[in-house]
Image (cartoon, rainbow over all chains, first blue to last red; front, side, top):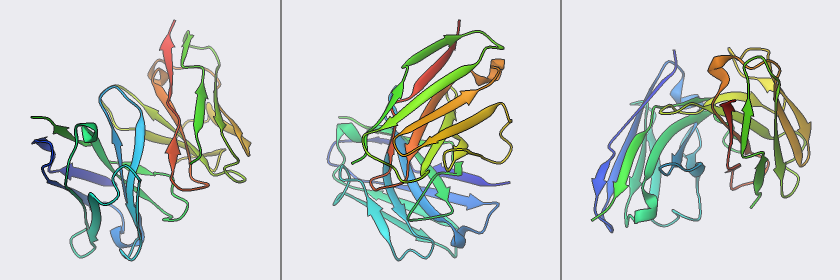
Length: 120
Length: 108
């Protein structure tokens, strides 16, 4: 059974930093591209960032470029999202998702999400 | 950026009825680079359809997808109680990958 378990969310002040983690199991992690998708409270889905299976390629939405860094450790089956210079508009549930393709991704499996709240 | 517009915003139907949801793209997403997801309150989205018309693993055959280019449709042939939820389309024909704003299917 595929499982994606996010952690690291919480309350952070504007301008602060946070690192999200996603622990994966039930599939060959190193063979899949991985992504982060977020959902602001009561709103729709927004693509945030993606990384290829070997970590050699990354992509960022314009809204987070220069502030967020995606990475992965295939030896630990774990995906990360380092978030800095956080803003109120970054408040959302962050979902870890996988896809078979990095360049044409649809999202097969989703974690349960971790809530990030940016507020003073 | 490809903008996806879903209609209607809310669909009020009774169990057993047919639901037809639309997703229109601001430009072509390629032959069939479109997916549909279902999200229930308090839950993560779940993949229903990919490549416009292919059902994901474990998805009942009452769910079907169609369309190409800029116009896509998700059809639920006979609504079951568990199908009342919000549905999102997503395009992966051109980055950035984008989602529609969602269609809520509610019980009439």
